[in-house]
Image: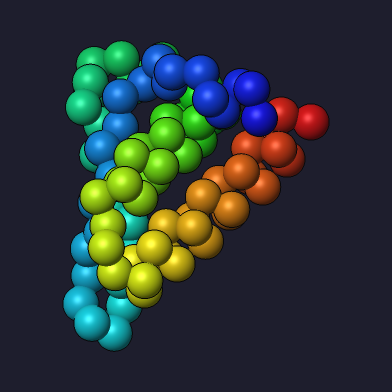
Length: 83
């Protein structure tokens, strides 16, 4: 957990997108030049960080659930990649 709390080196922005039937989280790199030399784990950490920032802006329970599920999946993937 301590690793996830540290500031991500990669700057990624997260947004909720899609239509009423299918909502998903969309990511974009804020610093595209540095994105060529990143490890997968760095990207996962940055995505988790972006989702946590997005959670503070969301007011819909449905969107909050989508973000919580995304964070859980990213943490599981990060744990598998790290071991």
